[in-house]
Image 1 (cartoon, rainbow, N blue to C red):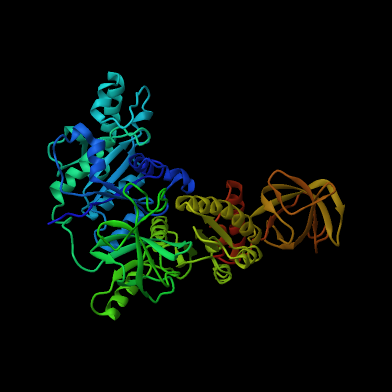
Image 2: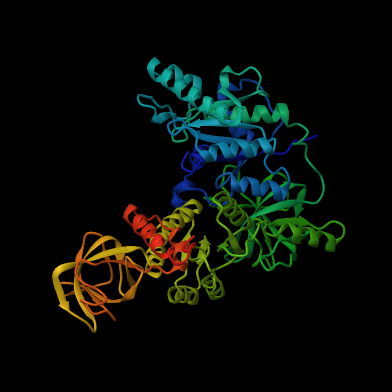
Length: 584
């Protein structure tokens, strides 16, 4: 039985070189045109076996393989890998986990390994960026062993040390054993690490040979060509001049033919039923998102392949959704597609609002939010609307009055309303930067909220009326005071050490300037309503801010200074002479 292309996911931490490795294989530079240099949509690259024979040269010798080539999927981190597996079964047959030998493993690397383990997906590590090891002499597209033989022994030893370090961290954090690929005898027990340079192509022949060899040895049954109606995952929806709307997709099962009736996931909810007008397949080694040559028009395509499907009524097709060729009961297939199109995210009673361009993007973002315990109230495909802004403005938690726009436009009336209602909109086409921007905003907003809350709460304060600083005896009494501890503000009540109320602070002044607050150590003039100097108050009297009992519990939420804690305790003792459990 003929074998199909193994589908290979390329995973790894951002900036560790996933796209650069694929670009070297393709000889293109898609990564330079991606947002932030980081792949955000899943692209597919068909590498024919003939190209692999050519690149691997003497490494292969006379050996021949059954697989017709490799179909690489460049995922935006490992989260889209998870999403694709849940939507299309075992979409990826193999994976390449790219690790920067200089940067070593990151939390995202460990998560990738755990995801691959959970999915029982065989994988190889590309220990990338060996050209950045000090003293390394690079050689374009040279097999690893040939390049290694050209290196200074000290440089070669440093590479081994870095690989040993990576292997140690992988074992400590995942329990997996890893070693340099040429030192492994049993590939079922040890992860192969292939040293590579995505920039210069060193080690890539070894990496390709490893993938083809693993596919041939361990995936014979999985790669057997499946006959029957096609199933695919939508990558992107595109408007093609002279053609209309088309969808870029990955066929992972069966065959799609021109004239087939298909059911497609829709952003509107109700699946689209249409007929295939045309199929365009990228030429080998051409990347489906960014072709540098024209597509080949074909009558039918079988798994596994990156394919552009042209049909009517695809304007609302859902990126990350499902395509099914109709065979059997149309209503049953529509219901299955409808269920697969539901964004699988746990929503909270209150949280942020998220808008994105694809199911994969949204579920990946929700995965990130769940890790950081950031609740989501609403998540959907499409542009940010005025309705979203109004809804966000009603959330009780100010940190939830935020909208995330991942790779989607923001309607003009939504922007205007956001400014008016104080709702923060974060927009970026790089996922991790959205979260970085939000976290930074949260820190700033928390400080603002702290200031606002402090203004609403009466804090402990203690003053002494200074001798020779009586400026007015009454209506209001104006006296010079020194703040002994804590802080005082206009509007706050004052009591004496015997618990008797003496009035409220009307205003604070320092020289010619009025003040909103005075803190420990400052000497200022205070206007106090109600008392008369020489009767209710006098020079050298010590007065305390009369903190309302209801505010004592609120004060526990703040980090009080030592002097504030001391004054609050003094106030508590005074108040408890009349009420035993005051401020408990």
